[in-house]
Structures are given as structure tokens and as C-alpha cells.
Amino acid sequence: MASGPLAGIRVLDLTQVIAGPLGCMLLSDLGAEVIKVEPPEGEPWRLTGQFFPDESKAYQSLNRGKQSVVLNLARPEGQEAVHRLARTCDVVVINSRPDVAKRLGVDYETLKAQRDDIIYLDSTAFGRKGPWAHRPGYDIVAQAASGLLMHRLWLDDRGFPALSGPAAPADFTTGYAIALGVCAALHHRSTTGRGQLVETSLLTNALMIQGSAFMGVPVADAERRSSFLSDLERARAKGEPFDSFVRRRRSMSEAVIGFGIYYRGYKTKDGALTVGCLSPATRERMRAALGIDDPLEGSSAKSVPGEAIAAIEAMFEERTTDEWMEVFDAHAVPASPVWFVEELLENPQVLANDYVVDLEHDLTGPQRMAAPPWQMSDSPPAAQGASPPLGRDTRKWLTGLGYSEAEIESMAKSGAIRLGFDG
Image (cartoon, rainbow, N blue to C red; front, side, top):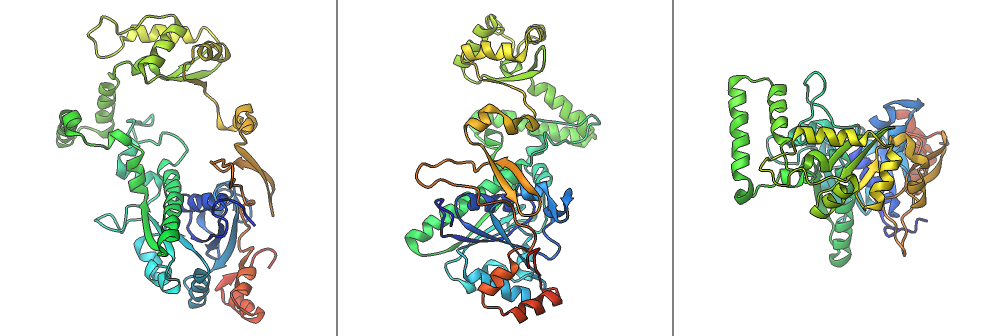
């Protein structure tokens, strides 16, 4: 049995793709027993980039430590089975369009009738209210809707709106919000005895991680915000192309004082590194490490002159990354080599802190992946095993819920369930 802080808690995982599966995987890492209900064909992330039938790295990376039960919720027998299962669970997590849960018989009101103190975490793209509530959405859609896609004014080479990297920030932050919301609701239930409906969305988390960019403080930014919106309105009225407007605004934003040298990446003699000096003290230490004076000292300019930036960039290319890191470490300058993620499974820093975990998958063998993101001295989280093959645990759970062998076989033949590789 798991020994983490959530040991003894049972979670019914009705989620798919990234945000919900990640949130439930984190709950499993914390010791909860997580039962993932999938449709007969498997959830979509199993089918994305399969390297083995019904298995993909995308799925395996977000579903470790769970049990897989296949139920066809479009059939009455599947709904009856999930209702029985819900009666045994403390928590339900779902991420679907507003109309889907009710149609499949797994909405909050229906499952609350099965267990009055159930905690039901409902994650959507845009929330349950408002003119966008009906819309489905994935990370890139939420990024566009929240302003996150244009937070850094990135465009691709052809001028199209572009993702800044392969990660899905709205999805992954929502996954953490799901786990945190469940933990808070469990604490509330432990003191009051009451369950509740907990809601989060890709939109709210995409807004949250933009921090001060979304925040409005009239005394600080009313003029700047008004100027931007007026410029945007004029550009749209004139028919200025989207990429032209973005490039123009980006050139204006690059006039941020000091960011031109203190918070950015540099090429070195044999690679690249980044520096992140956001305080006066760290900037002073960086200048000392480089042996330069403040390029803004005695100047009324709002940005570092271009020739000064070019000279510093050329200076970085005179030494290797390791040589620069030795200099920066000696001066306590926040800096790092630029690594590729493929290099990090064996990285000494990662290994020294136990940030990876080795697991054995039932079908595809050994795997190494990121460890639970917490370490606790008294109730340590732990990966509860690799992700489950599709339907591996269907028979076990239906038997435990009181179904006979004959009923299980009949449900399998009708398509209401799917039995796993050992079923």
C-alpha cells in the first residue's frame, strides 16, 4: 500500500490528454489510489505516437501509478458500473466539455447522489459560465484565448502566431491546480465532513502564470495599457497585418531598461548559456564578472545602446560555456548552460537530487522519468508504478464491485467493458 500523505484516498480519474491525467498522477505520487476509467479504444493520448499497441510515451509520462478500467459510458451498463465505482471513491476528477459529463452520467449532481461527501474536481477549457463555456479547448487554444501565446510576442518565420516551446504551459499548470484543489478540498472535508464541487480551467491558469502582465494597477500602468489598446484598435481599423503589428510592438518592448544584457541567452565559444540578473545586486555581480561598467551609467537612454550589447555578445563568444560558468559561479551570478532535455536523464545535478525514477512497465519494459516533484521527510511521495496497460484492472474492479464472472463476460461481449491483457 502507498505510504504518501494521501494514502487511503481513492480517486476516480475520468480525464484525458494532459491536464487531468497529470493532476491525477500527482495525486497518485502523493499516495492516493487512482482508478482511471477509459473508453474501449483507450483515451486519445494512448493513441498519439504509439510505439507499441495502445502505448505511447505521451500517455505513459502522465499516467504512472494508476489502474486502468475500461467502461463504455455511452452504454447503460457502463454508467451503472461507474456509479458503483464512484460510491467507493473519495474524489472524482474530470476534464470534459460541459455537455459531456451529464450525457455520460458522470456529472457532479449524479455522482453526488452516489456518495454525498464526494469531492468532484471539474476542469474545463474556459469555465462553466460565459459565452465561451460551450467551447472545447486544448493548450494552444487556451494560450491564444488568454494572451499567453502573445505574452512574449513570438512569431514563426512566416509571421504566424507561434508556440514558444514544446511544453503545454496552460495544461501543465492546470494539472498542478487540479492536485492542489483536491488536496484543499480533502482538508476541508476532514474538518467539516462535507464534500464539494471544485472547478478550475485552462483559461484561469493561463492567466495566472502571466502574473503582472494580466494584472491591472491603474496608478502604475493605466497609461501604458491605454496606449497599447489604442494602438491595437488603430492597427485593426487600418488593416495592419497581424505580424506587422506584433513585430512593431516587440521592437518597442525591447527598450526595457537593462534587460538587453542581464536577462537573456548568449552564444559561447562552444555552445550557449543564459543569465538571469533581475536585482541590482546580481547585475552588479555580473558586471564584475565581465569586467565592465554599467552601460547605462550617466546616460538618459531607456535601453542599452546596440553597440554595447554587440560588444558584450562578442565577449561571450571568446570563452567556452564551462569557462564562463566557472567565472559566474565565482561571482554568484545566476546562470546556466543551455541544455537539451535529451541530455538530462543522466545529468549529475538531476541524479544527485533524486529527480528521476526508474520504473518497469508491464508491456514495454524499463523506463526512466521525472520523479514526484516533492520530497517529504515524514510521508515521502513515491511513484506507485508505471502507467497501466489498457483495461488491465477492469476484471479486478468489477469483481470487487460485486459483478459475477458471467456478468463480466456478458458486458465484455456487448462492448460495455474491455478486459485487459491479463483479463
